[in-house]
Amino acid sequence: MRKNLIYVIFIIVGIGLGAGGYYMLAGNSSEKKENAGNNNTQGSPEKKKKKVLYWRAPMNPNEVYDHPGKSNMGMDLVPVYSDNSGESGVVSIDPVIQQDMNVKTAIVKEGKLYPEIFTNGILQPDEQNEYVATTKIGGWIDKLYINYTGQKVRKGDKLIRIYSPELVAAQEEYLTALAYDNAMINTGIVSELTKNAIRKLELLDVSEQEILRLKETKDVRKYVTIYAPFDGTVLFKGVDEGAKINRGTPLLKMADLSTLWILADIYEYELSKIKTGLQAKITFDYLPGKVYHGKISFVYPTLDPRTRTIKVRIVVPNKNGELKPGMFANVDIKGESTGDFVLVPEQAVIKSGRQNTVIIALGEGKFKPAEIELGEYSNGFYQVLSGLTANTKIVTSAQFLIDSESNLRAALSLFTSQKNNKDSTDKKMNMKMDNTQTPQKKEVESEIIRKGTIDVKAIDKNGDDMLYQDIMDWNVISDKPGKCPLCGMELRKMSIEQVKKNLKEHGFKYK
Image (cartoon, rainbow, N blue to C red):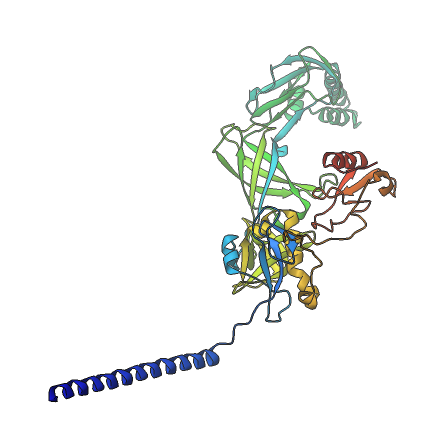
């Protein structure tokens, strides 16, 4: 009995210890939960439930619905949420969807922008080192020392010898005047005949040394010889030996080709980047890999009204004669930076007409469009004049933004629609679901969306036989330029016949 009593006592003590331990553990657990709940309540705000604005197709931003489901391509629709912070124009996108869409961002930085212009030009001789041989006397080509175009000549080489009866007569007149003046010395009569004869010889390009030789020797020369004024190459030979020539006839043309000019075309909007002294890198297709260097020596003062370009002159050395006049040159002109600027990557800018926009990444899946003003462009970056500051995070790559130009405009309109109407998030899209729960597209009403049999000729109200048509929605036709109300694309100007052809190819009825 005593032994059984001891066992009973042990059992009772064990039960008591077990119950006490259980209640202690339960109390600690409850206290931890309560403290955790209090901490959550005090340390962070309650997560707000976001409101879905609409659902859109992952690969087509302008394909939108008011219920979840499948897109036309069979993909799950993506929800687009409103932003509960109250900030105008902000739209939230689920982080998982961002990852699936490969959204990339970058930080806007400040830096120097070195303008760079790529253009083309044509090689030509240096106009300052060209020479056209002509004569002020008529006669005949007695001897032609130049045998072919392209012949190299040295300074002082004989080019052409001309026989001229007119030159012979002028020399004889000079000798006669000298004889007359000598005969009249003792009489005291001063004659102007000699002075007039000398002036006539000078007007015929007879040198002073030749006149002195004629005075001393009394030897009348029947020929006048033309010499090369510098080292060069014959570019043009206009006469043959024995030919009769008149005064002012171009006999030949030569040029020094050791230095050439490139005349390059610069578009009007790039003129602010150009000035004399800028360095240029020049390449030619016939010499792959070889680079020449030159600099702008002159900017021409007039603009071509047809091409809206102005020409600049670039001096290029050609000592070894590799370059030939008339060659086509590829020109890369390096500009100078005028300071530090806010720079934005080219791929981050959404261009639509006169408006330039970037998408700012606000964090936590929130994005907001910002209109910016752009300046110069170089090496993949634009200068930002206003609308964006340094150290701002922006979107640089996303499939839902760069699908196509029309999708860009549609996506941008979806982002900016809330900026123009703060209450748009409370409105419901007028769409219906069919029996299979397949979402339907929003219906858009517009007078330029043609239905039934389209009377193409009747649309042409101004009678110019030209209309504007959307290349995605072919039944959107207008007599005036504008945008498609369905996809947001600019309407393309086409002839009436082309519009009819497009309607026929895409299954629309017309007359």
